Image (cartoon, rainbow, N blue to C red):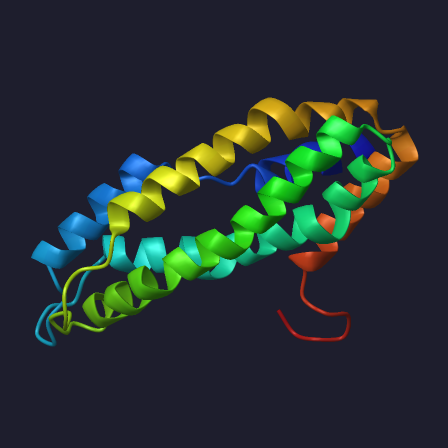
Length: 170
């Protein structure tokens, strides 16, 4: 049961919309804004991208910042802690780069032609891809060093973060 929860939590933690997909979605969205007389049967790329980075990314960052990175720091590896510091700073940078992309996509998702010049989607996508690769290559593998009770607690925290509050209707 705990391993199954951990696998599920890890898949959430490693959430990733590839930078190429994000850039492609943004470009397609710019060309195909929704109109009031169009009833799409599936979410537009702009809606999908907005949901991914507005809903899933904050959960992903909370998983790392509030749980995983705290547990990994307790391992006491100076080089790992330095990489974690850099990744946490990158969360702030990515958040700042996301803001103009989000505003631009929100206009498209609402069926409006975006105003102003397009944001630097390529820079956001490239930095996001590099950030995810750094996490996967140099930080996440250290989770294997964590004891089973800590892994269980991480999985439980990730599941709880995505679960409706107790007593609420889903």
